Image 1 (cartoon, rainbow, N blue to C red):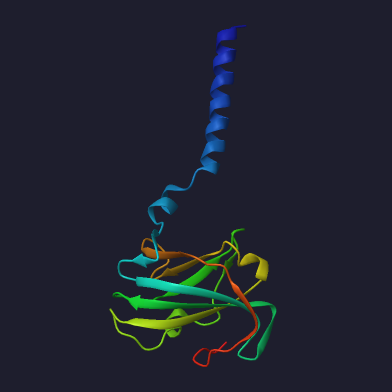
Image 2: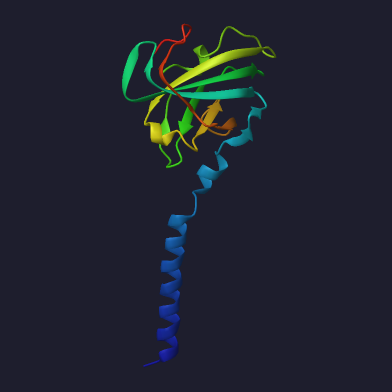
Length: 165
């Protein structure tokens, strides 16, 4: 029996198994190519997000929740495109979509003009800390504004007449 061939075959099999395990851990090339381009607080095509304030409430516009209402008030200066979406990513990786859409979160505005906006999320209160807010105009291969949420204020009731839930 030729031990050289046995060791060569064993080494080749070990490298093959290692390669398969590495392939499963590394990101897919197609996903990397289609990933969003992240910008902090301001992005081309989207615009600027400033003065972000977060309030956690038991009641929003008179409606209660099984979790908590997370009300995000911010100032938005639109660049070119209307916002398609927004979401909060909690520190644990859970994603939360807003109850209202970014398209109707702001007062009527025009590109280049600053406007007050409000997004409302329903999520567990403990997931608000260290959460990240994303704004985007497309879900792949486009710019995305990334905003680290500041410390939340607590209120029992919050009312925003311009926002429906």
